[in-house]
Length: 160
Image (cartoon, rainbow, N blue to C red; front, side, top):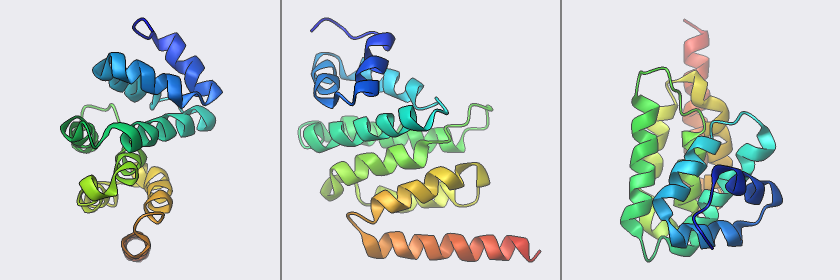
């Protein structure tokens, strides 16, 4: 398969064809990462869900062979959550947790970093709630604890 274009990737995502996304990843992982990250800014719920699903699928199938590549995805999204340029990576919590859920034995320690970055910022709360639902698949205790902390924090801010 020749190098994938943005249009081709979007078509594969729309079709839910993660096997061909994986083939493109195997050809040029960095290109696929960049294209998926760009696609994650799309506010269309279906497209957004497919992007998150693609990150999880790739992590499930390639994180064991390329753990540093996937750690870098997590780091980039954590960094973007803290950047103040105005380009808000509003779906970062879900992407980070998708990578974690794809290979929890490699990346579970990053869940707390994601939570600490997302919880104080209301712009991340929709993605954070979806991320916690996903995290509950592999670590229900941690996800439940984070949900309770988020809920307590929201109550605390309302009472001010």
